[in-house]
Image (cartoon, rainbow, N blue to C red; front, top):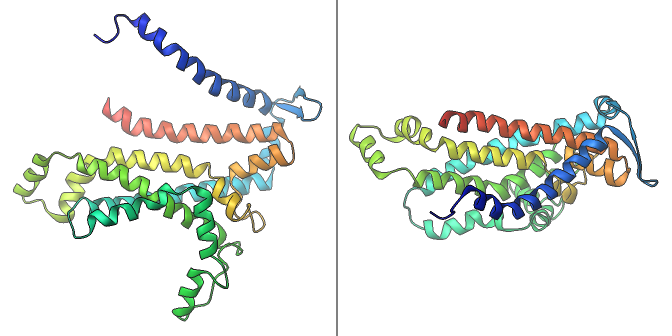
Length: 288
């Protein structure tokens, strides 16, 4: 037996537990207090204001736009990333010529930092000299203002995120595919289940936990998107790409409105917890 008693196990875990509590519970408690307070940033004074910050958020047009942008980005980007990751995983679960060399190319974007990815795509999005507009011109199409058109900018940022993080969904789902026992595949072939029928009724149910896990991780990550928007558009043009994280950053560190920023952060935390609860209900609950 590795640990002689439960008390010994608790003593060994206590330093890490204490450190984790300090790094998570203290910031969350400060956000909770600030969300119901008016905070004087200069005088370091705090005054309890009840639900005023949440009422102000409900009437804030910019906050509503940030919520809409974050939800739209999270739903579309995570679904596309998991869908493309699933298609790539099915392809790479088979042996084909060049598979060994194609695999590193597929996962390469995930190994780059966000700032490097943003710099690469900013060059590709350039109106006069960018790779994408030159490709459109060669096809006889009009060039596009990728980052400066309010109707196009959010989708342009989404394309960068899909390019960088589809490999993560791909690797998670590929691990699920390769963990399916060979005897199940052989039994399906013996019973005459082939092609789409075998994938729909046998393969997909077996890898559904990995698909849901990839969807959960990408949904949470895309919902708190900040870095790509900050690097590519700064929230513009206008507020067409301003996400909830960027709204909180501006309120807290640009306008020094800590109460409003904390209230928005608390709502963002609640939405992320709700997404995790859905996954727990669908997967952990089903397992039990």
